[in-house]
Image 1 (cartoon, rainbow, N blue to C red):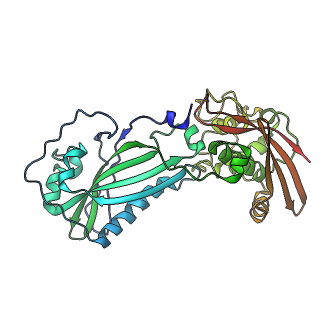
Image 2: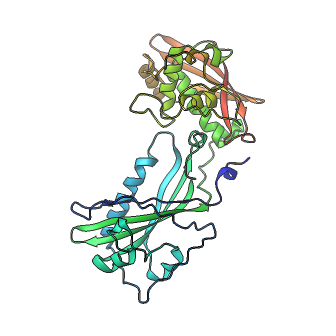
Image 3: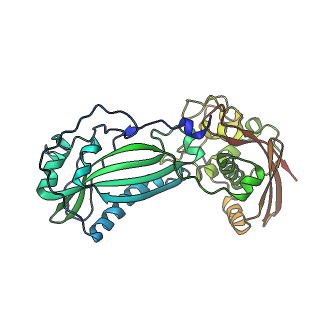
Length: 364
């Protein structure tokens, strides 16, 4: 199954953003709970607007730039999470002219508690404001797709009510709906082409190999899930979290550890463990005891990181049939480490993504 086949044809979601652009603007209110219309699906919502419509206030170029900066900062709180997005950008912000309002299929005349019992059009009339169309483009990493994100990626349009008050502009309410467009495709890496890997396989392969190195897994492994020690598992989870959503405040991986080990060490792709914190058929034997093992930094991790960063060609990839070998040659103070990691290939015909997984490791 292709990646796009997992993307819903249309996704409607609510995304109220309420925050002042400048100190002293309108107080924040709860996020809107209304469900907006999807542009890619039939909608039963009929919007009847009054005539004449209130005249919107046009933000100055400086004001619109400030609004854009605040919106992007808000989006970045999600976009900058480690390992979540391949592409995430704010494409455009524009004022929606009144002649387009009816086509938005948004209840602009409904009184709502989010606006102190007033309607969107009433607020545009007094204190004055406008509607903004904000377009974003996103594409998830394969790691993010494996975690079954609530909303689809792609091109999305968001409509916001912006109010002009004495102290400045305020984003007072917002709706968003998925447009159904394909996200931008990153350029193909020459090595990816040489190895004849999908983009998802190539990205996973690089993240997995780097995590193995940072975890200091520098020994022979014929069956990694059976042979990894508890310490190696903890070091690997810590290293892999850098490319997979980071760690929680409690010190666990933000992504369920069962998903990480299945993705990186198992061929199974159709069924994914539902237990968020352990168990499942692909958990390492060393982690199946009664005590929870938390991610921990490999004591040599920083030295390994410095060596990897200083030697961009430390890892060389080669493909033979359906196997990819990553050869690591890394000079450390304790001596040069040389490893061969052998990865199998998983297509996306039986699961959400195509990927690689570690089959074996050998010290050379």
